[in-house]
Length: 390
Ligand code: FAD
Ligand code: UDP
Image (cartoon, rainbow, N blue to C red; front, side, top):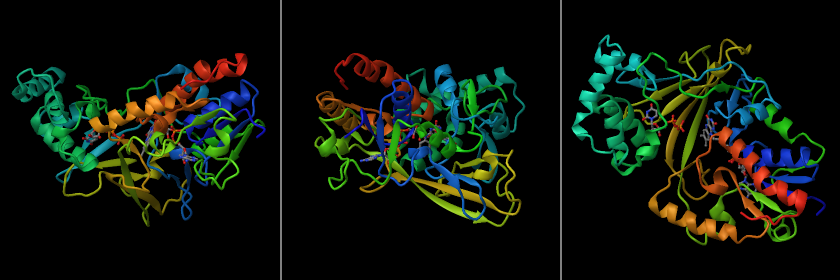
């Protein structure tokens, strides 16, 4: 095989590694992916009837405070000035999310300023008596008090995780800010935006280098393929971004994931909900949220009489489902440690990305950790012949 590196998986992690090794180190890289398109879960395409860009694996919003990642991303795409804002429907009424002064005042039919709202929430969360929250339920009550927690978090979280919030780690909602201002931006990061001509154009530019060859429809574990685990490992260095348990034939047991089902519909109206994402907080609505893709790109000249919406449903993944969010139970964490040990012993194979490390990574985190893998492991190997170790 006439290449210096095989990358398994063409998501942001795999393509960042491939692009750096090809462009910075002048080496030949073969990228394989079992899907028929590149880009992993960030892949998007124009919906056939309307031309509206649809994110095939769920809505993807780019945001980062990492200057290196922002500079790197801007080499391949410009970003729009899109700022993500989310609303939620509770008992037939629409509120701004994440919870901010607007949400609090609307919910309590009040006109509190920041200090009064803080005092109110403090009083409402007093039931915990200063105890450190030990699960998501307690964390929710401690952050915003029981009434707001029960209205906006408890049932949404139960729908999303199909698990009693008392059994879930507090950390799940620690990324959801609570603000005592009217700022209803969803993310706190310095940089935010959507790729001007879409995710796929960005991703294709990363792969467009004479030292990079991409082969789609190629499963690393399919021994009938010309490039597969059997004939690559031990001969050519590998960066593997598929599921870590699958690499080791699930020898230490399966790692559990949550998957999503998407129900897409083209509607004969110019605007269905007036905003990109509407959450549904209550248990009687089976989906967690509806995305309306035209609103991600208000600057585009989309058709005026049709729109594309996508309802999102969440459930535990079974065999054959797309793994989306690591569940991370205590058993999962034990198994992950065992897989990490196995990975360390795998000569010339590095494990990376969301599936390869069993970690929820935003796009900027996947890109950032791929850049670090190149700096810390691949560059020394390529320049001085240092051993590759996971
Ligand atoms: P992936 O994109 O999953 O790529 C892995 C690739 O490996 C896939 O293409 C897969 O086909 C391939 N592969 C797997 N096994 C094999 C095999 N055996 N042989 C060959 N190829 C294989 N991030 C944000 O920053 N903002 C968001 O708003 C956001 N929204 C998200 C919404 C959802 C529903 C999900 C699931 C993720 C979201 N993310 C978001 C995270 C984002 O998708 C990831 O950060 C990014 O996809 C990580 O890239 P990756 O390369 O690690 O993995
Ligand atoms: N969450 C909630 N209500 C909402 C939005 C989020 O309870 O309206 C909670 C829920 O537990 C979810 C977590 O906050 O799992 C993180 O939400 P986020 O929107 O960041 O999750 P993602 O977009 O990754 O699904």
